[in-house]
Amino acid sequence: MQDLERLTATEVLRRIQDGSVEPMEWMEACLDRISGREAERRAFASFDEDAASRAASRARPGPLAGMPIGVKDVLDTHDLPSQYGSPIWQGWQPRADSAAVAAARAAGAVVVGKTVTTEFATRTPGPTTNPANPAYTPGGSSSGTAAGVADFFFPVGFGTQTAGSIIRPAAYCGVVGYKPSFGTINRAGMKLMSDSLDTVGVMARSVADCALFTAAITGLELGDPDAKPDRAPRIGICRSAAWNQASSETQALLLDAAVTLSRHGAIVSDFDLPAHFTELETAHPIIMNHESARAIGWELNNHRNRISAALLEKLDFGLAQPASARRAAYDTFARTQAAFSEAMGELDILVTPAAQAEAPRGIEWTGDPVFNYAWTSLHVPCVTVPAGTGPGGLPLGIQIVGRRGADRPVLAFARWVQAALG
Image (cartoon, rainbow, N blue to C red; front, side):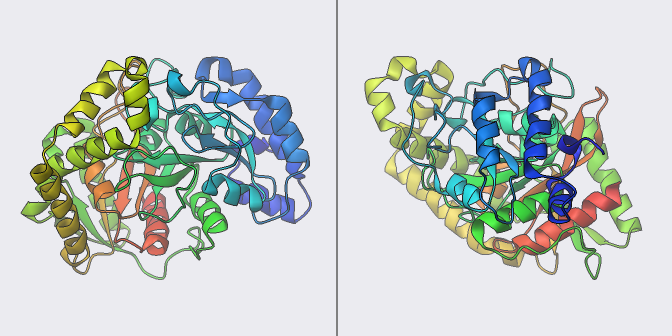
């Protein structure tokens, strides 16, 4: 039998349903993989092999049927510490699961461990390395989840995104990242930083796994992205205002993708966001950093010396913003969110870079979200799919974006794009 840890969740669940695989075998395969790789990967902030095995033996029946999952360490768990990537919270043990984790367990999923996050999912990285090459970052802030999925530690994991913390690490690690429409997955029990931006999402090794998992924990009908759509999509190739910051390989990737998608039947055209959408470049950091500073007011007031200098700089910037600047930023959010659907016109999806380039060398920096923050600000669904490798042999990704609430067609067309790109 093919190694279970390498199969998609959708495939293993089919085998569980037909009786050829037991859920416990799935967990054991993942634990064996972790045992041989975690010392180099360092994907977990908290991991207890025996506890994971016991939990798998008593997993609830349900649509996820014992599925091993990773949980980013900003989502509370009642049985594993929640430390939020900060020494302030070292060893903290919540009494309850976050809403997202509770929903996953109720559907039959089993938590393998808590995955590494940057400091408060914002700044200083943890020790996780990229499975494609440990000399490179896996991206962040959902570092451990991206690396864990890519290295076959678990088929599906939770991430969160405030700027680019799902899409970018998924691209760097060569997996699928899905940031749903804002508010799709309940945030109760999350270490919230930006109320206007923080979004719980999913990483997996297939678009179908992202849809299956999200549907199971939300009750939404997200369809079967493995089913071929009844038509090819109408695609806008969106370079965005940050195009000059994309590497040559990323620029070539997007332009080659346009030709390939057209060849496969898509109606492809160039697309530019209206000029006033560039105001998000100023609005996003004002809102993100001001809300984050307010959200961790207790930590700032009582443990300022245990917050990194890099994060303090951002928080102090947020607190220094006058009311007029904040009002202007919120107004920009409201105007662009209201205008986005109409701006897309007859297009089904946009295709745009997922990141500037391959993952940066070293693990001290998790990359720039310049190709992500606008879509997070607009509250729209985004999916990144693997799209080959760059000159250094590391993965590259393509990002698919759609209208808010149109998650089902966005997932379906993301699968179409992935298949067309090969």
